[in-house]
Amino acid sequence: STFRADSIASADSLSLLKKSSLDAPAFTAAKDSIIEDFSDGKRLIYYYGDVSVTYGNMKLTADYMEYDLNTGILYARGTKDENGVAKGQPVMQQGGKSYSMEEVRYNFNTQKARVTNMLTQEQDGILHGKNIKMLPDKSINITKGRYTVCDCDEPHYYLHLSAAKVMTQPSQKTVFGPAWPVVEGVPMFPVVLPFGFIPKRPDRATGILFPTFGEEASRGFYLRDAGLY
Image 1 (cartoon, rainbow, N blue to C red):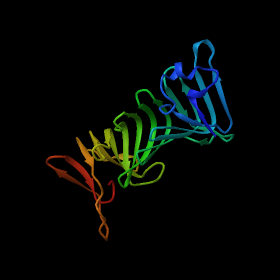
Image 2 (image 1 turned 90 degrees about the vertical axis):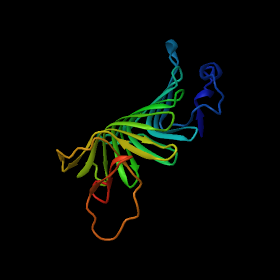
Image 3 (image 1 turned 135 degrees about the horizontal axis):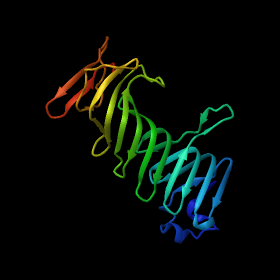
Image 4 (image 1 turned 30 degrees about the vertical axis):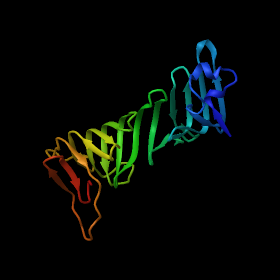
């Protein structure tokens, strides 16, 4: 069944949301429970167990969510089982891409989000981010990022990105500020790139390819061929 946050009988939906139900976030019924707290001026809804919400072309799933109707802010995170293992961590799907994260705060009014520890596929590699801001134009600002083709939880090699921006319009590309390669946890100083971009990966050739760096006068440094690509 589908539960809409603007259809709660105990709260006047029209005065709370000031928007039509077509524009309001739509929640699925939580597996365990839904708790409403409208005391002392609060307008909070808590969802426990395998819940999802859709808003436009965005869909977010998590094991726990809380929604503040006063601010339009949704908070989502996973939970831990009896053994202390995390489960149901947030996964956001938007624009044909999927983003796994530790926790997220999403503002439905501004369509901005703050994300902690995000993981997503970028070109043919994996992009990690520690602190992330997702903006209304669908761009993503990242600090303390890593880009790698190693799919281990702790990659053996990656490019440390002090700051990066993923842009999706008019076409998708990722640009980054100061960055350096890290192999087996060891920074490869003094190899530091002042800036660069991650281009679309070309068709691979046969044989062994070694990681190299490229340079274009108009676009700066970029990664190519295997390895840290």
